[in-house]
Length: 245
Ligand code: APR
Image 1 (tube, rainbow, N blue to C red):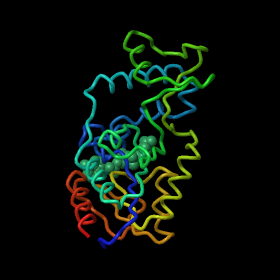
Image 2: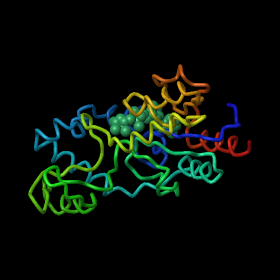
Image 3: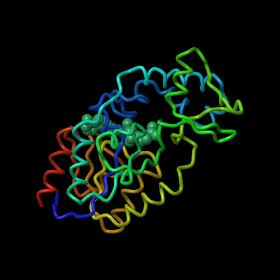
Image 4: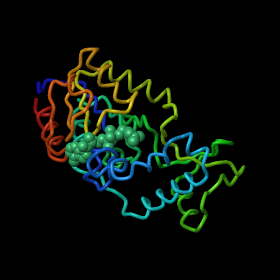
């Protein structure tokens, strides 16, 4: 890898959080790999049409909230180091776990193109509440918590399959992809568009692409370098090279 990069964009996926105990989706132990039907609970049309899908989703959330809160790992911290070196222009993350912010990445640099699990909104009146409050109601026995103001359906502010991405957030991500000189694609199978297409946008506007992922991705052919080493060691090593240059 050339190391004289000055405008690095990180595009991260679920693989950057597996060392924190957060399962990914398509890896060997991923959520979709081990339970293919689970994807219905985050598919908009199924979620809206089927009350049981919504109840199953809230039980899945309750389980996640009852596990120990995940902590950022060495890979998240490496991106903080890269930011502090002045070479990082942004993190476009597909993750909804807020571990980049928890690690100390500046919130203004983190673009959550698939939304966040931190808040939940009513699909009828738009009221927004903390997801933790909704999960507490599930823990207290509510099968499907509804909006306390209008009785409407509640849905976390994450992007489900079939949802549109936030145009402002994704617009900023595209702008960053067009201005960077290196994209570090970390822990993503790069198979969900339009987020994965940021790698192509960056390369087509002159950037290099380094893919850090255990498995092949559809964008490997665009990559200057492919790193199959575990992210927890690979990313700190790559950042150390970038910062030293
Ligand atoms: N080191 C290297 N690679 C890893 C590690 C690790 N420690 N842990 C996981 N990976 C790799 C997996 O092999 C996999 O290829 O990370 C990749 C994660 O890919 P996905 O599970 O598909 O996650 P992601 O690309 O973020 O999914 C994109 O799909 O389900 C939707 O909305 C969801 O944002 C998500 C989107």
